Length: 411
View 1 (cartoon, helix red, strand yellow):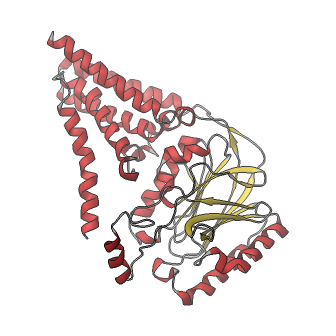
View 2 (view 1 turned 90 degrees about the vertical axis):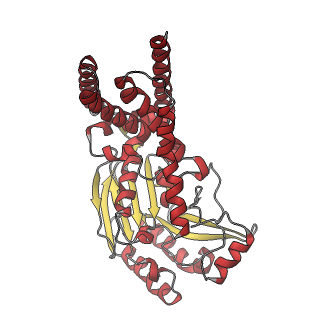
View 3 (view 1 turned 60 degrees about the vertical axis):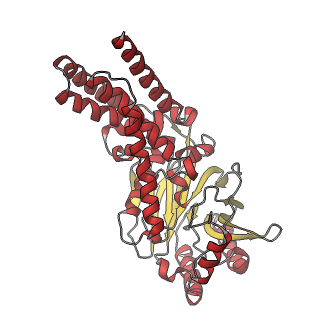
């Protein structure tokens, strides 16, 4: 309870920071503050939330436009760019009501311009198809968190994933969720070898989540293992505080251990890791909430023709959080102009196209296989080329413009 209260209090600092920055802006007119100053301050505060103290970029305002007209700005300036134009649109709406008569006309004109630009951007093809279609399958075991790591459940879990995979048809790529194998990789080496042989016999690449242990360093890694025709390994880079590592003193670890709570740190993987492959297509992998960090997904682009995320949203239960996580994954596909395959333990497993649309999805809390045909993509969106620089640069220009206007007005 204390940890949740602390998290909420910390997250509340960021909108407070946006308001504080806005309060220090020059006393310009209502229109300038609503349309330039406050949107820029809000966007910068959201950006800071995404990387300070390891970052917690959950539910940035821009995600709300994934199905809206302003989502067309995502391939250009990313989710922070969408947040900015959304805040500008909100400020313009407010100015159209609260500002002076002349400013109201300018606010309406600004809304019309935003709508026109969004419509034009929505028609732009930022990327192109590269290579033949791949038949893909997302294998979801539907095993809840309360059962997942019970020793008596291990054999049944392995048999379920094996049988679901054996039952697949002509598939080029099968993706199992995060930690689908409820054991350390070396403890189930025979099972993993058998899945690899199955993949080789069928020409089917299998990506599966498993925790690995490095005997040389004594380190644990949350990993995505590739078996079948191509072998590879990706180690999760961005870990969850208090979920995968514990930035606490030794006596707190002792308390966690005594309460039978997790206390052992997982080690992050290197920032630069080789891409995984399937059928000659390079794959950009992420594990769990790594897919809410757009800048880290961008590390794999434009080299990757396909994005894959494996996750365990079973922690969230039957709440709104799995739906929110899917929404954020959709934004990553839209920003990067790539298909994104999202395989989860209990849902929502989904195939997302380069426009951020869900083309296939599975049910929650039950075993399922989600299949689709996807086309690898090539090319780079403006966001892939420039990242958050466009959105943050525009924020800087807006604030400078407001400061100059305030100085001229004061003079």
